[in-house]
Image (cartoon, rainbow, N blue to C red; front, side, top):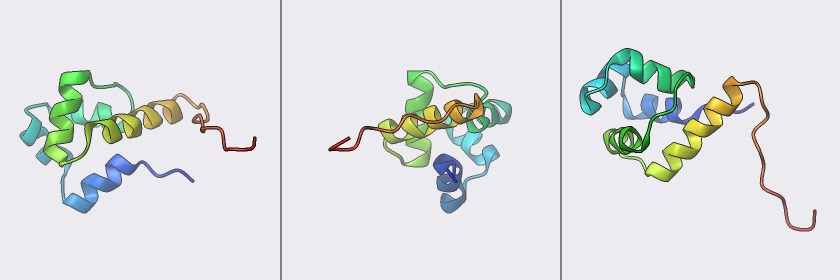
Length: 84
């Protein structure tokens, strides 16, 4: 089972959606849309989110992309393994 790591990161850091909204200047519903995969943040928003969470923007981007893929009911792509 794939766990949405961004959500887990928020929990570990003690960040609620409201706190993340306060830190980024976004609304709580907007944070919720990102969290559930309804919407994807643009580059500027992604940088604000990553900074607010003290995360690498590239890692956050991968996690959000995975969440959107799962929301659409598609299996995430896995990189080919050597020898396959």
